[in-house]
Amino acid sequence: MRMKFILYMASVLLFSGISLSSVQAQEQQHYVILTKKVAQLQPILLAAEELKKEDGTYFGNFEVIICGQLIGEITEPAKIDKFISKAESLGVTLVACGFSLNKFNVNRAEVPKQMKIVENGILYNLQLQKKGYHSLGL
Image (cartoon, rainbow, N blue to C red; front, side, top):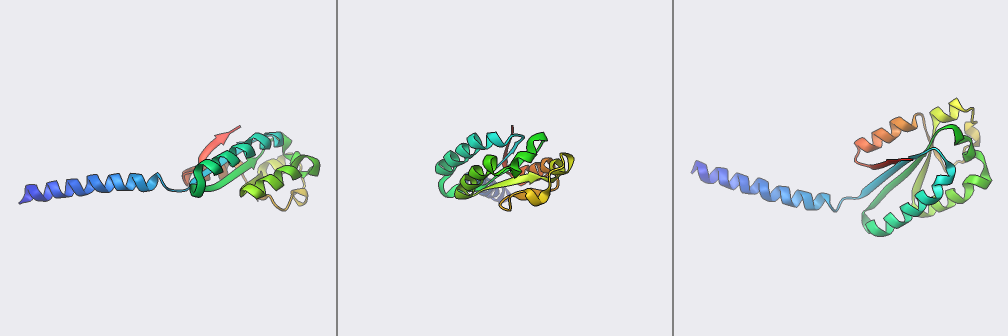
């Protein structure tokens, strides 16, 4: 009797493991990229567009964190506006690192309103990774 129970429980665990893995394979895919150059938004957004096609209904959140010495470029409409439009059409969130804004004396009031500001871009990236986001740093 005890042996049947053990075999029964083992088979339940085995089959539930299989069904859980197949459910996990169908979960939404989330992405975060940390970049130091506004110009890199071009290939990043192209990648987001392709992943959105590949993932279909499983395409989740896609966030791009901009930080570093060239962060001031996000306040230049000629450099950022086309990327903001493309990001919005894809559902990509552009994020500015507040630490970089402070360090390089960029006025937060000049950051486009479509962009999210976080206090520490590196910490934010790590927090998203803890939530299961696929991450890439450029």
